[in-house]
Image (cartoon, rainbow, N blue to C red):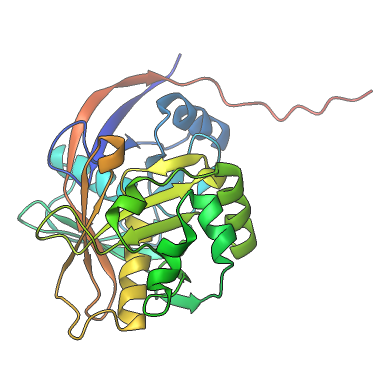
Length: 299
């Protein structure tokens, strides 16, 4: 049976078994979609990145959750490029990557941080039913209304849309007990991948905010670090004028309530960029089942 080298790479952290684990298949050439899906299902992490050749960019990445293909994944992009550099397949500098949302720029900085340019931001403020939103997230609606005037709920995207929900204090965000079915219904209504709830009441002294992401509609009850949502939130903060002077670089905490602390760096000076480190935690070979045959069964 055919095997492929397969890794687990922890992104948005410098420590193994922290951050957000992504599967990485550094050579997915010749694999059919059902094989890609089977590998992602077997690895059972939020997303697996499959590296493929591209005629439009330096390489192509396809992303699969255990349940379906995902158009874009920030942490898996960071993980894949970190692994390729670690293996000596690519060097530090500027790179391009083809994704289902277009060709993106990726910079491998000499200090080990990998930066991913996001798509042109879109931020649309919405007027939610705070009672329904609070019930879906398991958060007192008053904790959402308290900041709603200055930091409204919005749909934001830099390639993948999320519902951005500000919360007043970390104690309320940390105690969130989401109704995943209700969150999935919200995601469908607003046509987003999930809900990104955040508070400026962060744990670290150098952190800009603390976030939690719930995306059951793509098979992720809670994500420990979400690059695409972080980029969307950075664009949102710039759009609503959250700062008198937008910081050159913001640090978003995530994952602490899953015992996988993460640190996502965000820059919104001009293009929106998301950055972080990554470390390999598992390296091996996976047996790949044969591709499904498209046999037509006739009566």
